[in-house]
Image (cartoon, rainbow, N blue to C red):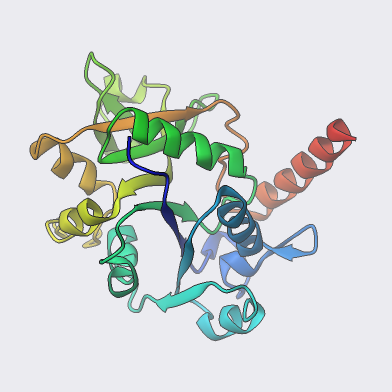
Length: 251
């Protein structure tokens, strides 16, 4: 089994329009800390050798706020999708010989233990790509995980593109991945923007992996709230409540 060396790559370029504020999404405050703080801490506690954050909206303010974090910042402008965001880190990571764990700067409740489990699962399965997934209660509009009968992931279908049968799938994409670094940039080189949004989607690397005959697995996070992205002020308030409750239960 390969060793567990990994870098963390945090996607943190979003504007966060639905937060109804001019502030970059990852600068919104949860328990007196910006959202990005939580992803940095989880990556460090999980053992990341290097942490890279892809920033865009209000990049200067983010750099300033996290000047002492030992995080490497790369900028995405213009913002052409998640695949394009990851490509901005190519110079920093392309020669790295371990794994890259892709995290989201707006998922503050993710635990270091879950990142470690995702990596362990990835190595045990000898996968090239692993997706962190979960099973939230319906109804929801998340991307569905389509698998074959052996449990290998075939593709991720966005809710709006899903057939009625695919919409019945319970397992959804959290946007968090563990990928062999060399394969990541090889696959991103083949991703196109041939879609309605004209964006480069990170999810496309899964179909590329399947075409090339390498293994793609999912690892299911049992607590769907832990992997919830913060898109609205209501979700931010819910995350605050979750942190309060988990503190009480650990006392």
